[in-house]
Length: 415
Image 1: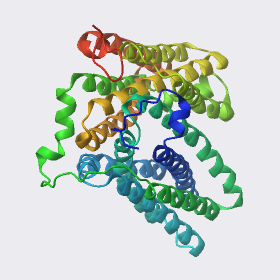
Image 2: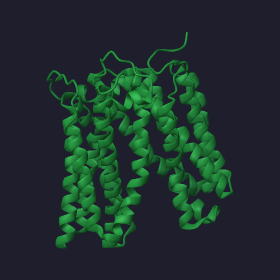
Image 3: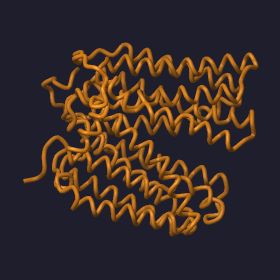
Image 4: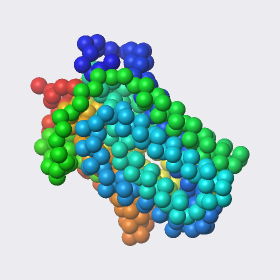
C-alpha cells in the first residue's frame, strides 16, 4: 500500500494489516539483531586476537569514517534508485561479511587486518542502510499512520538492540563460528523479506551527480525551519546530554555497583525507550507535537542532572529509564515530522544528512563528556551537560517558533 492510498487508519490493528510495512518491520528487526550480534562478535574477536584496547577503538573508528564520508553520496543514490533494492543489497553485503568471517575462523585465517577491513565495509553499508530504511517507510503507509509506524519501528529497533547482543553472548558458548553463522542466517532472511516488498515505485529522472544535487539535502534542511529546528535540537541534546561514556566511572566509583551494575545502567535507557515506543504505538501524540518535542528534550536534560547528582543506584536507574523514554518521544516526533515535511524525491538525501547529525553527535558527545569530565570531574560533566540540554530546549522555543507552535504532526502551527 502506498502513501497515496485513500485509507486513513487510526488503530494499531490497521497498521499490522499493512503487509509491506510489516515485511519491512520484520526485515529491520532481523537485520538490526544480526548487526548487533556481528558488532559484539567483531569486538570480542578483535580483543581475543590482539588484547589491545586501541584496536577495539579502531574497530569503531573504521566503521564511523566511511559512514560519514559516504553519507551525502548515499542520499543522492537512494533518491535516484529503487530504495527496496538498495536496502536488500545492504543486508546482502552484511551477510557476505558474516560469511567471510565464518570461513576465516574455520580456516584459521582470521587476522587483525581482516577485522579492520570488514569494519570499513560495515561502515560503508551503514551510510546507505539507515537513510534507505527511513526514506522507505513513508512509501508503505499513509501519512495519517506514519507517526504510529515510526513508534512501532522504534519498538522493534530497541528490542533488537537489547536482544541482539544478549543472543550473541549466549551463542558464544557454542563458539564464535556459531555467532557468525547465525548473523549470516538473519541477514539472509532480512534480505529475502525486503526483496519481496511490493510498493509503488516511480523512477526518478536521471540527472548528473553534482555538488548541488549531493548537497540538496543540506540546503533543504537549512531553508525549512521546522526540520532544521527538530534536527539541530536532537544534535545538541545528544552532544550535551549524553552520559554513556562516563557510565563505567559512575558504576565503579560513584554508585559502587560494579560490572553487573554497569550492565543495568547501560540497558536502562533502552528499556525506557522500548516501553515508551510501545505506548506511542498504541497512543501516538496527536496534538501540540511541537511543544511535546521540546518538553521531551528538556525532560531528558533534567534526567541527566538527576543522574549526575544521584548517589542512589535505584534513583540513577529511574533517571536513565525516564531519559530513554523522553528521548524516544523526541525521536518519534522528529523522524515523523522530517519525513512528512520532506518531498519523496528528497527523502534519501535529507535522511542521509540526519544520519550524519546522529552519528556525529553520538561520537562527539562521548568526546565532550570525556573532555569536560577531565576538567570538571564526572559529576560536573554530566550535570553541566544536562543543564545545557534544558537551556537548549528552552532556547529553541524562541529560535524556532514554527516548531514550538506546531499542533498536529501533519499540519502547520496552531491558529
